[in-house]
Amino acid sequence: MKKFFSIFLLAVIVLSTTLFATGCSSDDKKTIRVNQVTNSIFYAPLYVAINNGYFEDEGYKIDLTTAEGSNTTNVALMTGSADIGLMGPEQNVYSYVNGDKNYPIVFGQLTKRDGSFLISRTNETNFDWSNLAGKHIIAGRKGGSPAMSLQVALEKNGYNIKTDLNFDTSIAFASIAGSFLSGVGDYMTLFEPAASQFVKTGNGYIVASVGKESGEIPFTCFSANKDYLNKNPQVIIAFLKAIQRGLNYIKTASLDDVANSLLPSFSGSNKESIKEGIKNYIDIDSWNATPIMSKASFDRLINMLKTSGELKADANPDYAKIINTNYGNFVMNQYFA
Image (cartoon, rainbow, N blue to C red):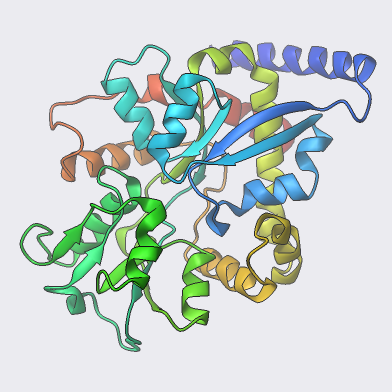
């Protein structure tokens, strides 16, 4: 079956490439509407692919919008206002379990651990997770990957989030930093470049990486609904090629060059903050080496969802129906072997 699918995809690529070459000018790029959960250096391969022209090399341009929450990105996919979503794969699981007919399918994993950093109001040079006992922590939206990953990290360190501290999931993702600035909470979690910017302005201090503590888990992935995925295989293949080139560039280029490639996507940030953010994500080994989500990774995700109480213990989401590895395998075998 996989061999047949690869032959089919190769035929699609040859046909679409021929049609594009004969029927389109260099200025006539097709648009892919991408909705991302938030704008963060955590998703650097996407921005490098956009700003270095890798999507244009494939004959496409990207219309990028930001949702400020995976649940909102999921809605964009379900309603057809976005073609591809960059979001937490827990949303795919929720939609599948809820019985949504045209639920989004993961076709490419981007990150393999939580990309948020724990921010303290005080400079704790010898931080220990025991410092959080009895403290108020702004954890993110209930049911979202950041809150669940933080819960994993806390439970790993012996905490009961219901009794040992104030695990606050009442504040929307986009309002976390503003709430902390207004005096709410002792700790919060932020992604880069916001985390480093907070440090630079003296409003907080990075004391730990949540993702390093909680361990590997598929954290953010590229998804499309079933109809779009089935009707646009050439788009998915081109998209994954561009993303993989972006990731490979980050692995081989200097921090300075990567920062230059990211600057257009972070107009409110300076180059040094971007370099610091990139370094932080490289240090914790943030990105999946390929777009392919393994069954073992999927199982870790499901275990986290069940442990956090977001998924019933007897739920049995089907890896093969939620995760599509055909496109990722094809791209890696044909173009990056």
